[in-house]
Length: 217
Image (cartoon, rainbow, N blue to C red; front, side):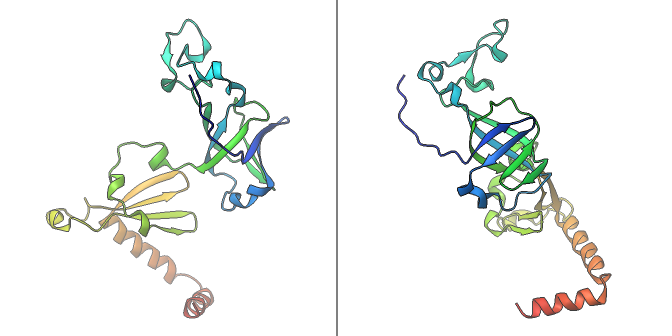
């Protein structure tokens, strides 16, 4: 089996020195901006020890390397032996120190290259029964407010919704970190009313500063 070269650039490495951490290379340090302690992320690693033609040619393995388990195709396992030895982990950032992300223990070797890091999003990475199909979300109109992502539903096919009551029309996907929930049109109105109550109860000095800020922008 021939493998054509395909270039992946490490952005960091797994380090194990009593603790497990990801050391991001200096040239990629700015890409950490926005990550915070407590965030769940997905690590994509390159299992370099399996990057050999004879191991990358294996298409069936005994799960957990136990010959008592029937052979299965590698795509149905998490074996490090596969055509492209990529590994994916969902981990929590316990703390951040400079260019280091401290995480819980994972079974990757010290020095394993990290080829990418992505935030974990429940809606995409741990899908359940989706109330709003992905194709009906208006992704370009999404807004981020603090740590909250607001993803509205596309404003289409309204002629088909004449009989749908507001309490049944899913209008918005709300993401907070990895957690996702869906708000109906009725929920959205109640949320707006609750937020206005919170705003009205802010100290007068704070509201004045907010008005000055928004008036100057």
